[in-house]
Image 1: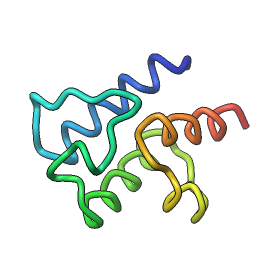
Image 2 (image 1 turned 90 degrees about the horizontal axis):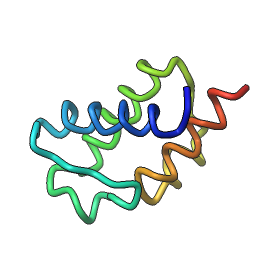
Image 3 (image 1 turned 30 degrees about the vertical axis):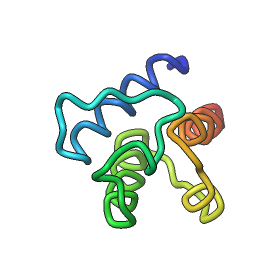
Image 4 (image 1 turned 180 degrees about the horizontal axis):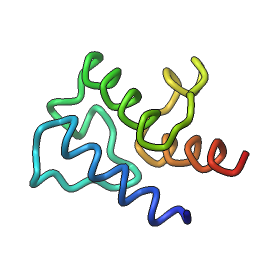
Amino acid sequence: MDREEVFSKVADICKEVFDDESLEVTETSSAKDIEAWDSLTHLDLISALEDTFQVSFTLEEFSGAKNLGELVNYLMKHLSE
């Protein structure tokens, strides 16, 4: 799976987690840009990503990602292992 496919799935997951089908995200999208993105929905997002991609984020990855692009970077790293 290439980065574009992974990001497309992440974008779909974001629409579901943030309950907004019209949500348009980019790799730089973060909690500052998405009103519904708070600490609880962050947990939901991480959980949904882990379930969908069958990976486990480290605590550093879980808490340190500043935007969706960084989450995709971590996903790509895990998917290549």
